[in-house]
Image (cartoon, rainbow, N blue to C red; front, side, top):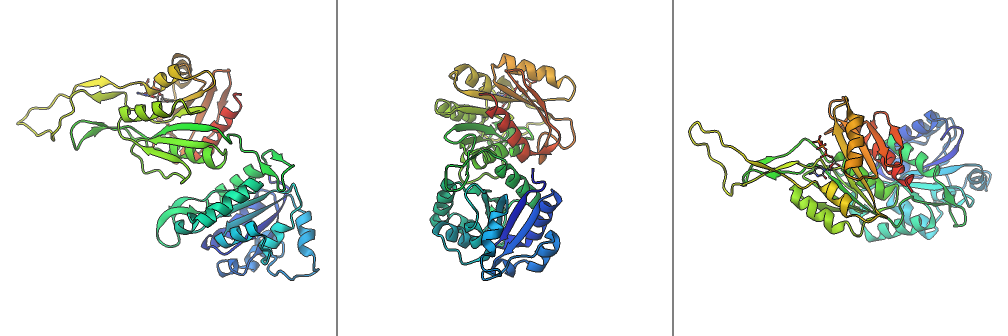
Length: 410
Ligand code: CTP
């Protein structure tokens, strides 16, 4: 989609600006014509010369350039503007109309209908400042596209929210946002987020079934798919998300209402509680099918050569229960983890037998797919007869495809 698009690429004062040359190169690689702009603070982290070399266009670096109205001409000639990284200060200036840097000046020179997209990047403390969050909410309301920062290692050495997406993913998000249908009646094009006002209930991760106070039966699910679904549903699709998560270190955005649970029973209770208020339910958790019948209250001790017998019983099939209790206007999505052989047959069977709207098939015996991996390959089946076989992709992209398929159901 970026091919032949004319893009202003603004870079501001955040340490993530060290990635700006790679972002610029990625935009160019996808065929965009890129006009870089760099603030004085941004220039502390990257250089105007480097951006010029990579984009083959001169980097705008001074407000009082020539001709005097250069920014208006440039603003009127482009298809979109990206500011990445966008500092807290630039966010504040954009909100309050302070156009004293090349980047805010250019943003103010975009005519109505030209999308502006920001990728905030800063330390967690700063990102969570009420002033910054309020400014972001206000800009979003106006129709400015926001590429939400993610969790990860920050320049301060701390781990937390505020990290800019890696260049390739960032450019994917930008492309995705500017390709969305826009409402041209608002001051800026308003990105119509597909799930705005919708409540989505998602489960993720494994469940642990205790044997005694220190041991459990579990599985290798990392929770990354559930976290990706929750993060994408809120940031890209604008949904109000509740994520019921089994034991998992996967990070989620602060806007996700995350409820951490451990056992199948806890997950069931939490999903059931949120069922009535949800429009869409996605069971991506790898739920244990069995639990221990008589959980020992004290740690099981070895007794000579005896090997203990652990009696198991079935857990509740949460997905099946929710599907049978939901209202007709609620959409329910399940997952099927199968071997590559016969996967389709089992997936279709689950769709039918559990009464689902969508089933997402993935396999455990394929390299780069399934548990623990950062990538996945899925096939989506809907009760309306659609089958969409996707290639190997990041779990983030995969989540986006699954959510997009759900939007097509109605
Ligand atoms: N699921 C559930 N509750 C369970 C077990 C599974 O809600 N106790 C959900 C999973 O979240 C997933 C789907 O059901 O969405 C998987 O279906 P299931 O029939 O359990 O498949 P597997 O356990 O993957 O496979 P099999 O039936 O072959 O054991």
